[in-house]
Figure: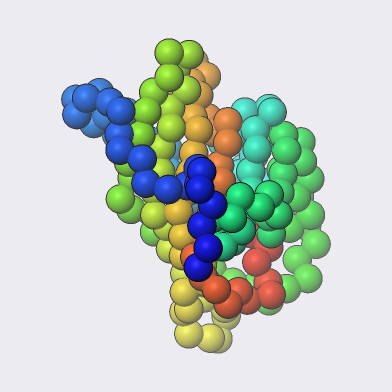
Amino acid sequence: MQKSVNNKYAYKPSRLDAATAQHILVEVEAFNAEYCAVLDGGQVEMWPEFFTEDAIYRITARENADLGLPVGLVYAEGRDMMHDRAVAINRTQMFAPRYNLHIVTNTRIVDQAENGEIEAEANFLLIETLVESPSTMHLAGRYYDTFVRSGDKLLLKERQVIYHTTILANDLVYPV
């Protein structure tokens, strides 16, 4: 596997002291728990509310990310674009009913910039169960996130979903 010299998704040690990282970690894990609960509960039209107005959301293969290629399986720029996608998914279900289960683990706080932006990473598994079918691992990978504060809550300014799964089902329609 080729890797670019300046792979922005390569391991970066945390640049925060342990106490600061732990404090932010609690907030980020609570955010991810709510994010996943909304998606797993089938409330896809609430999904854009987790992002800033000008946020970036992209789902990209690990191979493309390692090579610095911007091609993404899903790309949304701005909350309005995410809202359009969510409405289309929710109101035009042209696919079999399913249940999704997100498992997010190994969350790391990499940095907090002077402007307050938080850089975080987490592993995820997306398990899918089609009605009358066994559960399958639908997608596995990592979130590379940039959070900002809006009042007393966190919002995603950017979520790069880098999936490691090499063979994808052709029905990846829901946000990850």
